[in-house]
Image (cartoon, rainbow, N blue to C red):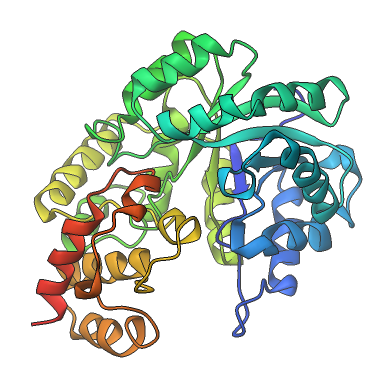
Length: 372
């Protein structure tokens, strides 16, 4: 796409936070400045990211500081902010205002799966977005996607006006039978839609590797960061236009920039190492949660269970076998929210999970581990 510089995008869902939980503008300003100074210009946000703080932080650190032609800004139409057609345009105007811009370079129909797509069709969301494109308030229309390859094929067949597809893709999910990253990417290629990658580091799981997996990469020369192999893997997949990284520190950004500024595809030794790491992960039976928080954003859990945080704690316990995870679970996670064993099994969380996880049964596993 025109005017996009580089293959690394700044994903603004996991921004630096202060102790009080708001976006640290000082740190983010340094990150934005560094990102642009090194030749990158793609920023990705959504109205629900960080409770609306992501858009506002971008206004304070990017759109109010730099000319409009110096950056590419993507936003999304998220299902939990509208229920009928009449609510879409006011929401869109609110997003423009929050971001401090008069148009979005890319506007994505957010988190499309079979169920959410039917809602978007019923409410005429695609038609409304096309109208905004004709008005010049959207430059490119696309979708972000969380479902099987056959569902993506259906959506692209029915909506040839879609210009880009944002998908979850990382080396663990590439051949996963649930996520189907490879098959989904091949459908996008078939319909000649450029691919934007989200979750290339799988919610941070591929940067904080267990020791046995990290040792595989230790054998490589030169030894790069764990995140570098994940992001370069995603960048090497055919059809990928952009890889988003949810950077929350300046050091993370500097690391990403160091190997993406002059991007080099993975060599054969690096690919072999990644294949070995995948086998190690498969043997650990980790819960493949990416901490998107849809399960708790879209439905208030009757028992206030902090599902993503509890799954993350469980994964770390399984990998590192550290007593600290037990302490964190029992003294922090369930202090203000419900225990895993408190689950009423209503199933609301499972209906909105992009990973299609059997959350109710997984919570039973968590309870068995931490509530002995």
